[in-house]
Length: 288
Ligand code: SF4
Image (spheres, helix red, strand yellow):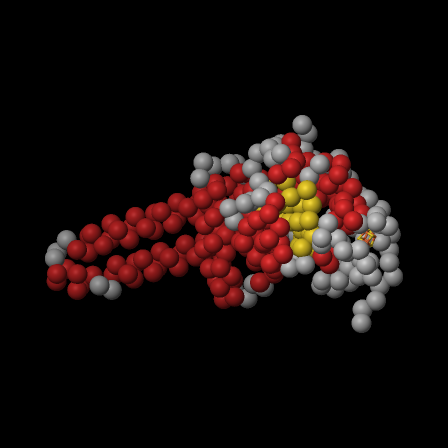
């Protein structure tokens, strides 16, 4: 069994100083060492567009001869219909790429986020396999893109409507306090990051919960009805959390796993605080 000596965490001792402007690190939700490559997502998206173009051409070309036998104008009608579908998909893809690159809000940003979460991500995972791109790498890229869309979409959030959702593995493995019932029960001994996170939530007046898994996380979200969630988790849980919570926007921050997965994990407090400040202020620099 893995055993670890309890270490006392100092608030803000890791990562960027808390007065940093909202940096690329926070936009991505990860440490530089785990930096997601948004270009992976964009590359796969462009490959998908190419595949769709080829498919649309084949769909038009294969029945071309048969259709003209039915009516001479049928191939033209089919070409117009397929062309409209391709233009719609290409338009959506280009708008998404524009939003990712510029970070600007667009009037149908929320719909784009929905399309990315529901349709694009599963397709890009399949496509990524063809290029031998790891699932976690695509998930990191997906979370970074999602974060960018959430930042572009969301303005100011009231403190009581902002929920910080944490994984249970952040708690020190020998701690007997049941923080899943109420995180404020934490005795603040400082053996894990929960102490700093509780103090952070109190400082900003936002609500915070700890979930042991997807089912409890979903129940917390249903009960608390937040306008925005700042979620801390691994690649897999963040991805499924973002998908499950839609249309509620989830700003994802990856946890650190110095002791391996799901065991005494850690998170960059400065990064969480910068995210909270950004959404409470509604501005990128986190100032009121
Ligand atoms: S959850 Fe609270 S009481 Fe338990 S180890 Fe962490 S800081 Fe200490």
